[in-house]
Image 1 (cartoon, rainbow, N blue to C red):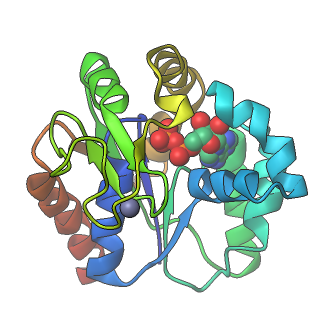
Image 2: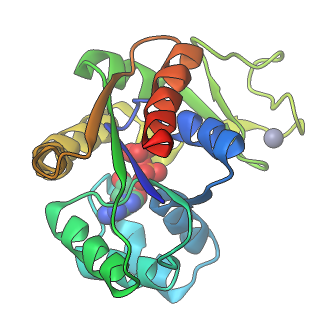
Length: 215
Ligand code: ADP
Ligand code: ZN
């Protein structure tokens, strides 16, 4: 079972992924998280990806596919977050899966108007130590600038600054949004309104997964 969660930066993909993996026990593959970890550990891959990630550009497809290949076992149950992000990556993913007789089962696309996406991204803060995600508008910590869970300082992700947030949205429109048409053509795309509150978005996503499982 392979489910892709698609959506502009700021659409709540990360939050919803956490909820869905808890609910369904999927393995979680988030390419953005992997890149950030590799950059922090200064691995070879991290050094190759760093300038792209920090400036809000996409890491080249070849590098992404190389990284993902060893991390997906066809036959496993996966929730993919942030991958594929281009039509070429989608082709690469099909190739990886086909080798194991699998294919993408469902693509859930979170839709959100651009101004709201920018507002959400630039108001996001993360814990510098444990990675917990906060939002200065919708999910404030008990003490300003301090993580509720571990007490460490909250920071803004470098690529959440306004200028870079706008660049990431533009990159999404140009390079990732074409995947909506691509997966519509395969008849496995479902669109979900991401402007609703998180519980309702989760319910809508879960309804699609349940419908798939019932088939
Ligand atoms: P977002 O919050 O924008 O959804 P992610 O955490 O998924 O961001 O990714 C952060 C950054 O990591 C991207 O802006 C990009 O530079 C890089 N990245 C992550 N996944 C991919 C991918 N599949 N292809 C290319 N670049 C990627
Ligand atoms: Zn913390």
